[in-house]
Image (cartoon, rainbow, N blue to C red; front, top):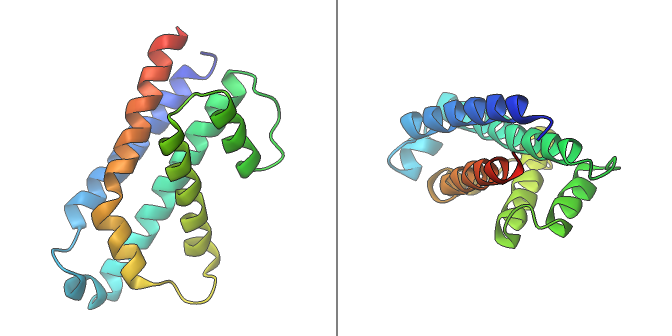
Amino acid sequence: MQNRDRILAKIDELQGYIKELREIKPTSYEKYSGSIEKRRSVERLLQISIECVLDICSLIGSGLKLGLPSSEQNLLDEIESANLFQTTTVRKIKAMRAFRNILVHRYGRVDDAAVFRSLTEELPDFDKVVQETLELLKHQT
């Protein structure tokens, strides 16, 4: 695949952010919500982790010459149509993208409970993206 080294660098970057999230993850919602520093750190790490996932998708799309997407949504639709990831994984990436938009643009106020839930329940989704990307790279060489 044309962008293999760049994709691997993004995977490495993503894994660093996820490791950091796991290290700072509070043991309870009360500990999370009671610390503005913790909340901001988690929000930022989630945001840049999601952006890494979207960058990986973009590199995959351009490397496989899926065409020039008009938007991130279009890119994810193209990846889904090409069956590059499992359907459930693409859905999770789309949900990540929507969540990133909330974090970045702060549509209203960020829901601390939703962020904590994402931190405690959805970190394995990042691992799944990494796993499927590595599988894709293995089959594209």
